Every structure is written in C-alpha cells, then in structure tokens.
Amino acid sequence: MRRHRPAIVEAAGDGWFEPCHPAPLGSTPSALWRVLEARQSMINVWSKMDYHARCVTARVLGRQITLVNSPDGVKHVMATNHRNFERKSPQMRRALEKLLGDGLFISDGETWKQRRPLVSDIVHKNRVPTFGRTFEEATVEMVARWKRKPAGEAFPMQKEMAELTAEIISRAVFGNTLGSVAAHDVIEGFSRYQDRVDTVNFGYFLGADEGLPIFQGFRIRRAVARVQGIIDKVINDHLEGHGQDNSMVDLLVKRQQKSPGLKLDVSALRNEAATIFMAGHETTAAVLTWVWYLLANAPWVETALHAQIADVCGDRMPTVADVPKLDWCRAVVEETMRLYPPVPFLSRQVAEADVVGGVPVDKASLVIVSPWLLHRSPDLWAEPNRFMPERFLGEQRPTPYSYIPFAAGPRICPGLAFGLTEATLCLAILAQTFKVRVAPGHVVEPANRLTLRPKGNLPVVIESRA
Image (cartoon, rainbow, N blue to C red; front, side, top):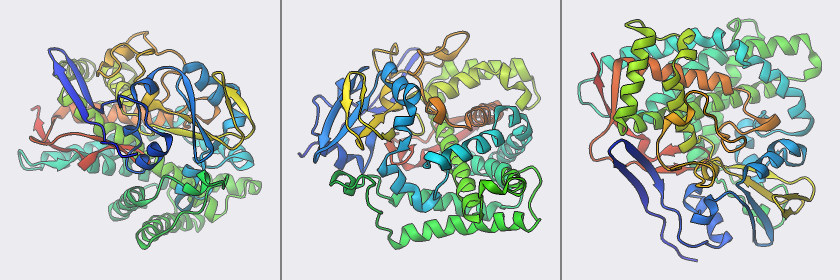
C-alpha cells in the first residue's frame, strides 16, 4: 500500500503558465490507499485516467464509492435526480456538524427545503448592490493598510484575504457590531477547526450508514466554542433590539418574528449565520489568494487586467457599478475557480439504488462529483492545466455541467452572485494600486482539507503601481 506522494508540477513559457498541481499518479492506486491519503489532501490521490470524463466505481471495506466525472453524470446527480443525491456525505456531515449544526450547507430534507428559500432571498443577486458599499469600504481600508507596509516586507496573502473577506461578511451578516478582534477570533477558530477535524469517517466504511461522531479533542472543542460564543452574542444582541438594521442576521430575525413557524430559534439562527460566514469568507478568501499567485506568474494577463481597469475607471476607484464592465477581472476570478475550486470535492450519499453514467450505485453508498477533476479533464478543456482567463471572455461559456465551482442544480450555492461580485470588485480595487509577487524562494503547493488552500499561506511582497 505504500506509495510516494506525487510531485508538484509548475511550468511556464512565452505567453503561457501552468500553475502548480500534483502530477497525476501513473497507475490507479487502491481505494483504501486513497481514503487514507485523503486525510492529508484529497487532490493527491488521482491517476491520469481519473481526470477523463467518465464514471467509475470502487469499494473500500465493502462500501461502494463512485466517481462521477462526466457532464451527463453530474447533471443526473446534481439536477435530474437530485432528490436521490441531496444528502451530503457522512464524512462532511460529521466533520461540520459540531460547528454548523443543521445549517443549510449540510442540512437536507424538510430543514433544507424550509431554509433554502429564506437564505437564498437574503443573498439574492438583486440584493448584491445593497452590499456593494461594504465591498468597497472594506477593500479601500485594506489598500490603506497595504500602503503603510514597509517596502519589500513579505506577508501571508491567505491571512490577508481571509481578514478582508471576513470583514466584508461580518458587516453584511452582522452589521458593524462584530469588531476586528472578534472577526479575527472567528477566522482563527474556523482555521484551527479545519486544520484539526478528521475528514475521513472510518465508521461509515465499517458499516455505519450515518458515520460515527468524530472525536473532539480539546483544540477542536475550543475552536468551536470560540466561534459559536461570538456568533451567539451577536444574535442575542439582535433579539434584544441592539442589532444593525439590514444585516443578514437582522433579516433572519425579522423573518422569524414575522413567521414563527420557521422555528429559527437562537441555535438555528446561529447555525445559519455561521454557515453564511464560513461560506462567505473562507471560499472567497481562498479564491482571491490563488488569483494573486496566478497573476504574478502571467504578466500578459496582469497587463490586460490593468488596462481594462484604467479604461473603465480612469483614476477613480472601481465601484460595484463597474463590475459588469470589468470583464478581465471577472474572467480571472472564474478561471481561478476552474483551476482551484474552493470546495474541490462534492460528496453525496445515495438515498436509493440508482444508475449514474451506466454505473449501478448502491443505496447509502457515496457518489463523488469533483470540480477539481472535472475542471481539469482533457476531454472537456483545451490545455486544462494552463491559466487561460480568455476561456471566460466574450460569449465563450463552458459545456453545461463541466464547470461547477458553486455546485449545480437546486443545491447550487445561494451566494454565487454575492461571492463572484465580491471577488471581482476586491481584485479590481487592489490591482488598481498594487502588483503582488510571490516571496522569493517560496514554492507554492496546493493542499485540500475542507477547502483548497496554498500551503504556508502564500507569502507575498507587494509593489505600488504608483
């Protein structure tokens, strides 16, 4: 069973860049080896054949796992017969239940049906302009902080982008009541939880269809308490009439007061607020971190992006009203999500036996739809490992169900418009003033636990464009 972990590939030439990724394995490893290795990083366990558009199945200790990597198969799982695949995997449910409870991300059945329209309405694309000023203000504050940094000083970009997106989501979800210290504590709590929680539930493979509760060591319990304590206080302040009007939590509280049948008690409100916060800050922070790495290695893209910002905005700061005209910024974000989808594996538990892509799947088995594999399939993309934002310019659009960074079907991320607009505008404001370069000597490597991040927080240095 012993294998060497794959080498990390990165290559560049005149006008092209292939960003870092693990080299595909030359042969197909055993399913058990994959499960064990996935505890460190799930993106390291795939062979060349796994990237092709097909559906394949294997067993681990008798439990069936099916990889669905074709657009037709993805459509069947995510849309056509989505009710049979709506449950998140026992691994994901058990890994997140202590932190998110029955929040929308891991809920299903009646709870999901009741809350999905509520959360979707609050983060609907028509409300994005309402939050646009928050995007602008928080990013301008970061521009001011970056201007004060000593020239040539290296700093961790992942941490910077997490603080930016946390500040944005804090103001959007909680109003201005959270504060920088509490926001930092929530970021640290989420980060420590992600680093330590076990994402492979062996109880499931040994026969427990629901998996087994994960062992909660002191550090995991402390991380959970840290996050939930802060969010509980903010929600209680809202319930007592001290909250900020028009924040997402305020809207949830008002919906509950108007419709008591929603049963959004303090625990449920906390779970939904925590879910929105996690999804809203962690995923966008990861995308923006990867954006800077890609631009630093593709100067021709950076030049085109700067030229468009200047053409659209001149010397004034980009605003949310400019986003529809900033095609290059949006295309860079979308191509980044193709190469580095923030949630690279979407696992579902089969409710009843079915057939996916010609493969029979058992009841209670796992089906894995992987944006990581799907987005890099040579059958679906030209030069799949190269950074080419032009794929998303003009009228060009990917084959349906071949590009799913926000999932697809009824369970598509309700914050899609919020996150894409936020990332595009943050990029435009920061890129107008700065160039970002990876710190000399640092070797970039992706790693996947719950989300896909660069190892080591991506140390960078910045250059003022002025």
